[in-house]
Length: 593
Image 1: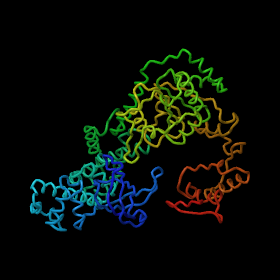
Image 2: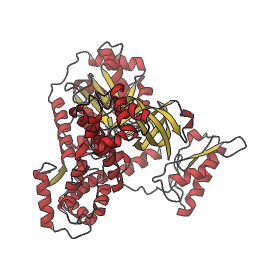
Image 3: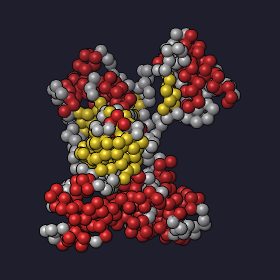
Image 4: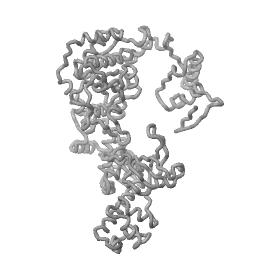
């Protein structure tokens, strides 16, 4: 682990949760020796830092894509001055208001280089200094004690097993009450402090000799299992049988059903879980789902819009773009303007992106807009999807996180219910990838009179997080939905298209293993798969396909046929070593450049 020793010069950014970006004047270092007598940008989560104070920061040099080289801090320690000049500088810093250089010098003249130690022992030692009042002496001692106490708490938390990052977050939340909270109920920090996980806290609690059936542990475990089940199965609620089975399995003892039901009712009374029609919700999941439903219902309750010349403008758009929309596509375009909330769904190649372009062009035409971005925004959950929309429409699209001005370090959105975006029309693509919480944050950042069109294929893989937004909206039958079904991307006789529909419908085609013009099923044993893929890639290269035209899809990372193993093997095919090749390894991955 590298270190830099020096003085904190300036805060560039400081969040309420303790994340800090600052400038540090380096006087000594090992791996960052080129910064000695220079300043370096550092980042990390800290309990308290003071400008002008000397520290040793431990961590590593990292390269930020936007801001360049930084020192990422994993732990630190404050350097208490031990020479007279350093003590004078310390006591006359901003940390001690009302103590200037003159008074600090007098303190050191009287108490010597043990001044700080003597002040901590007894504030009365300061009264030996001329013109020192008792009130000021007590204040100076109190500041020194607070400095020492905060650092001691951080050390104690780390000794328990918390990381520096977690320790700082815990201290920033509870301050001087930290150890009292830990003793009273260590599990409470899971709900209070961001990114503190149950498994980690439970491990630390067990080392502190907490009983395995302690009520505090069981209640925390119930909340953990409910969240874990939602994350793994994609639902926003659970059934009581699932929760009970999961809790018993984790806790490792025979938790009686009546005790379990008592804990559930207690959590319900405290508002931490919501019970509705035998569905058990965590509070955050329930509130976000209710907010989403209310927001959508409010948009649906608004009367349809009226455009007298809409048909004429669409005809002109077809002429200008030399395109003829089919019946479903025309319906999707019209409904996008008539309705205040609309879902457009369809499989690959049905023209969803074409419809988005039509809506963008038509909106600009109907509103005579030179700068459409002032009123309309195009969004997608991923950068790749946003880039594709930009290329298709000519209008800048962005990820939802970028639009909401997500701060990754503190996990907060700059656009929110207290700072809403001023937009009139929002189109969101690839909605099947959006989970309940991301949609909730998007809705909170939008005005109540916004017009929305959600686009996606509900048959694609659902979101990683809880909630199948697109599928649930369509199946509710309460939302205006246009289903695109005519295929344009593949040939009508494409077997890939036929196969895709059969998979969607859960049907195994009788000719699945038969070779087709655009499809081949190759049977081989598990231990033959890698060599078969290798051979196919070599054949493709011999046929003058470039590496950019070849794509290999694998369902898992690990295993002899996983992504990691396959990439290592294929590197020799697509990027073989030669006399001019340089190699370097980072995070166990070898690169050839």
